[in-house]
Amino acid sequence: EVQLVQSGAEVKKPGESLKISCKGSGYSFTSHWIGWVRQMPGKGLEWMGVIYPGDSDIRYSPSFQGQVTISVDKSISIAYLQWSSLRASDSAMYYCARRGPFTYAFDYWGQGTLVTVAS
Amino acid sequence: QSALTQPASVSGSPGQSITISCTGTSNDVGGYKYVSWYQQHPGKAPKLMIYDVSDRPSGVSNRFSGSKSGNTASLTISGLQAEDEADYYCTSYSRSSTLEGVFGGGTKLTVL
Image (tube, rainbow over all chains, first blue to last red):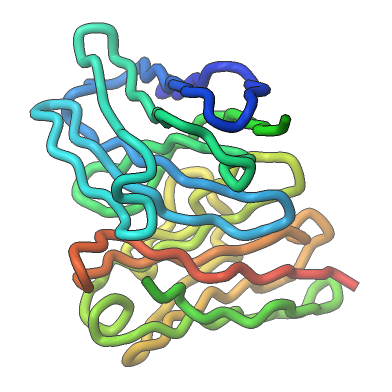
């Protein structure tokens, strides 16, 4: 069974750093792109970027380029999303999702990680 | 980065059919067959309903169908049921400004 399990909710202060994770199982982790999607409170889905675990090829949305870092440790089948200096506006739910075979659609999703940034 | 354009809300009665549109450009919806649709219930992760314009993943009801004409894609739900009430998002591969993916703004479906 394909599963993406994300790390738990985080409460941080502005300026702090953060790294959240997404562990894939039940499939060949290195053969499928993993994407990150932001959903701010009460708002829609936003495409942040994708990474290919096989060779760490990364594609960022221009809106998120330079704001976050996407990475992967293929030896333990985990993708990461990190911030070096959080802002209050980073408060949101973050989902990881797997791209299906031979398509750009995200066929499996993690349960989401809620990030709250407040002083 | 421009989001794809969806109506903010649509509604229908049980048993009826509704269609949600998703309008983009030739750089995304119109240029590729990679349009997908997601259903999201409150507090839940999105679920893939349609991929590659009109294909359904295993386990998704055949009441859900997708199509595309020019720069506009559509999701049709026939035989509306109460459990279809949710937010629906379209997304497309995009070749604009190195952006690989873009979502629509989302449509709230209300089953009356």
